[in-house]
Length: 269
Image (cartoon, rainbow, N blue to C red; front, side):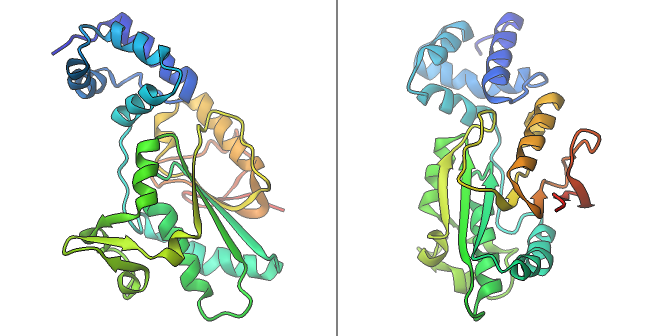
């Protein structure tokens, strides 16, 4: 195994933190374990050679591959289903009372797409049969082009549908083969995928009624996380909602969001 020296570790840690806000301070063993095979396959003798190569690649391809290796993209349909139930039972009725003609959602850190497609299905289910439904616009973003490519293909293991509500598998998926399913086109068309580095300034045409950013900030150190939450606040439409995972938290002393319940926050009017 190629040794990751302390100096190399600090260099790589600072580079990833400074450019992408991802804190790898306690991940030295993980970094060495996940990258050694990559270095060997590519013919690098040291981590220094590899780090220099990543920094010199102006296309972004190498750093994208690096981030794919170092961040875990674990997700599945209806993950933390209480959020989707709250969206269906509370948020959407509130939205309807505003008489707006477009509802905008952002799945930030969407990974392989299960989250934004679950959002699309939740809204499609809610508005099914209702007269004059609003336009549904869902932005799904991630820093990893690899997972976005997978998400756009929208093909998943059939066993991953086990937590879906009754009837949703048949309603929203087509069978590919004995082991795989594909999200139906009428759901796919509700979602737009885009590469977004959450450390960069946000540039969108208008605020979102709903922002999901779940299991993303676990990689960020405290100051950057607080800054990110405050930037999300600016892009949530007044009166609407911001969702994080049950394993994360918002420093309420540093944020204007009001906690509605654990992991669900609101920007008051």
